[in-house]
Every structure is written in C-alpha cells, then in structure tokens.
Length: 621
Image 1 (tube, rainbow, N blue to C red):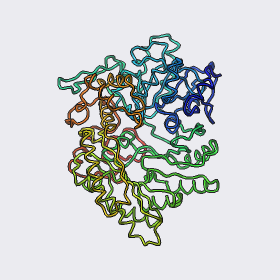
Image 2: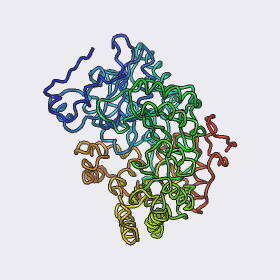
Image 3: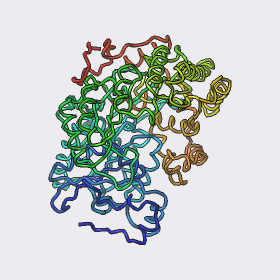
Image 4: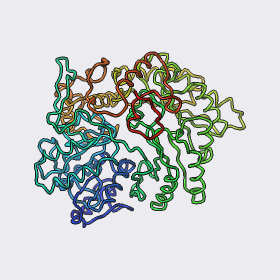
C-alpha cells in the first residue's frame, strides 16, 4: 500500500509529473510488512537519465529476487518539485511505495559522474537525513555509495556511511545478511559499520584517519580500528554467464535517454587507452555467454514491448561472438520490426559490415573516436589507431552509403603541442576529402562531419593520474586553435565544430582528484544553490569558486599540479587489481610515445589476473 499520495494539485504544478508517480510496467511491489530490509536505490539526476542506467536495473532485479528485501527507486527531483517538497515539508519518497526515504534501511546512491555531487546532498536534504554521516542515529538509513566515482570516494567521505567498491552482484547479499543480524541485536550504529568494514569491498570512511604534509599533500591514511582493512579490494564477477541480469526491466512512462532494451555483452576493455578510467577499473575483460544473451534478449523484448535493442560494452567490436549475436538478433528482431543499436564499435571492415546489416545508412551517422589529431599523440595515449586505419574505415563507410561522420577528440592531453591541435582540423579535412573521392553517383547527399572536443581530466587509476590539467584559459585557447584551423580548410563548410565547457571540466578535475578537504566546499556550493551541475543551464561556476575560496581550497593544487611518482593519492587505499607498478610503467611509455599492445595481442602484466576469468592470460606481475 502506498502511504503518500501526491495531490493532483501538486502533480499539475510541476513539469513531467510522471517522474514522481511510479507504477510503471515491471515495477516491483511488495508488502512492506513482509520484508526485513527496505533498500532505496538512487540515481542523483532526473528520472529520464536515471532510468537509463543499466547498473540500477541489474541491482533492482537482484535485490527484489529475495523475498526479505524490497528495493525501490528514487531520482533527483527537478527544480519545480524540489521547491514544492521544501515549501510543503514533504520528505522525499521512493517511487514504488511513496514512503519517505528516511524510513528505509539503506539509501544506495550510484555515483556515475562528479558533476552530480551536489545532487547527492539534495537527495539527503530533501529526505530529512542528516548530511553528515556522523550526525545520523540508529533511526536513520545507512547511506552507501557505489559506481565509478566511488573509486575516489574521499571528497564525499563525510556524507556517506559506506561505499561499495566493485561490482554489486558479489557482496551485497553478504552485507544485507549482516544487517539483518545487527538490526535484531539492537547494537549501536557504529557496531554495524565495523562489521560491514570486514566485508570484502566495503569501505567505511569514518574508520580511517588521514594526515597531511606541510605542503598539503597526503602523508598517510590509516585505519583507526582493527576491523577496518588497510586495503579495500575491488569486487569482481568472474563469470558473467552465472550472475544476475534483469528479465523484466522497468519500463518508464517518459521517454528515457536510453529508451530501449539494453543487453550487456561484456565488461572491461582490452585496449588500454591511457586516459580511460573505465578501461582500467573494469579489468579484466569478461564476456557474457552467447546462449545467455540470446535467451535474455528474447525475454526482455517480450517483457517490455520495446522496439529497439542495444548492445552495451566499452568496445563492442571486441566481443568475440559479435557476428553470431547480430545474426541471431536480425533473425529475431527483423520480422518484429525491432531496431538493433550497435554503439562502441571500432570503425573497421568487420564492424562496418555488421553495421550495414542492421542500420539504415540513409538515416544514421558513424562515430569515430580518434581522441587525438596526430599520430604522435595517439601513440602517447595508446589509442592503437593509425591514420591509415581511420581513413580506410571512413572510405569504406562512404563507399557503403554513409555521409555523416562524428569525430571525438580530447584537448589538453599530456605532451600536447599546437601542431597536435591543428592536426584535428587536418584529419577532419582529410576525411572530408576521402568522401569526395567516392564517385559522385555513389554518394548519398552532402558530406557532414561533426568534430567534437572534450577537455582532458586525469582520472584516478589511469596511467595519466600523475599528469597536470590545463587551466580554463589553456583549454579555451586549444579550442580556439582547432576552431581557427577548421575555418582554414578547403572543405570547412562540411565540418561543424563543438567543444565542451572549460569551467565544468576544471570542476570535474577538482572533484575527481580531490581528498576529504573538498567535502566542506561541496556542501557550501550546495547551500549556495549549486544543483544539476552537469546541466549547462544550471551550472553556476562563480558559486563553486566562491565555495572553494571560502573553504580554503586551492584549485591549482588539485588540477594544474603534476604529481610526483611517489605521491600518496587519496584513492591509494583501494586495490583495483591493476597494479601501481603497471600504471607507472605506462606513464613512462606515454612520455616516450611507445604503444602497448592490447590484451589479446600480448599480456602487459597489469595485475588484473588476480581476479581470474575473462580474456586475461596474464603472467604474474
């Protein structure tokens, strides 16, 4: 039974009331009196974005398979609903039951992007849960964070009771069983946290102390009780064929960002790009069984009514049975007029052949991600992509009927020089020229090339974690150089250029590389009105800079400063399997412009073999 029903007057006063009413197809309803644990799963952004997140769908399904757990969902209310909840003092609630989050046992928050940090405080604030973990009592839910940003949880340490480091299918039930025993015991809140810290992959910030050197760098981080381990080890599912996956994903009322069935075909990536955090965090690469994928594709399409299915992976081309899977999906989906989406493909002959079978080339565009304009810089970042491969791929695509191409690059990469920036424009021009080499009768309309540049952020657990970041002015200068060079090209009318916001990138870098001293500034920014920072129309950079200044945070200390090899990072207490020695070696190889072969070609000894499984055939590092 729902205990809170929003009035029609409230729902009619806000944009997109369907964000808040629940009751979607495949949403799970249970009798709250018959469960032992109530878990609210939160994505700290609007409903349409959160409903597109596969990780929450997996955990939602996993938790709700147990009769003693009821997992519900909650998302960040948009500004209009936020105002209503505050004015009418309505506590934020879960979609399924409409019960206040403060009455739950756990509030689990997936942290996908640094720019959602103030939204996390919004969720806690609206839920009437104390922002600081140390202020919570036995009557409050335990707030637990997970996702990629949890691999440097320190900027958020004061707001979370626990963090889950790794893939949720492995240890969450152990934690839930531990909680049930604690709940019956009547013991203090601190006792559960000490017990939880002994579960592999669980990090409890309050059980660790950090000391600093005079220059501001971290001196050491140590557990302050015997229950807390010195190292928190990432948890990994070694066999993706024998794990949880949703047969009946929840179907949103509104059109979500990813409004389709999502089929995860593998985790991890064999490529080893030195800027890519996901490629390091999710090692080793593990493939899902073809039979399992076929079975789940059928079930999910039958149980949702979706008219599109998408394959999810960091690099779908590297899935060893992609051709067989696509053939099956075409046979299964073709007669039913169900579209097949194939993101994250490398542009090679095999991938183009696969795409040409499932896409209408008249309507689609192809995406290349060279990341750097020059071959020298692509070797520095270990992209493993030559200009010859790029041009051959573009040529085959144009000959196959495509005329629209999207090109993604990064500016501000380590060792970048002005010629590397200009080479972005030159590469775009060369690709446009390749289009006009195709006989006129074979072309499909005008050539359209969209060049997009993001700005580089050195992320934790990458070989570039020691690198400096550019300043806002340096980023904008780089974008200016590219833009000016594009205007000088012969085919400039065929090339459109977009670039990311420099202010947002600088903030992302501070939050990604920050330590516990950043927490007060996050809170200050939230109290000043910063919210939905990933939305350009909401981002208030001046308020963030005020918060940093008032809280004594030196922006340059966290961004433009290159780190020494022996510096202690805020995230060094986490063991992701990939060794620091490997990352240091890759940092040195980057400086030399030396390419490291991918995991199928040759083992690089990264350390991920400790987890077993996957395409990892590693020697001991």
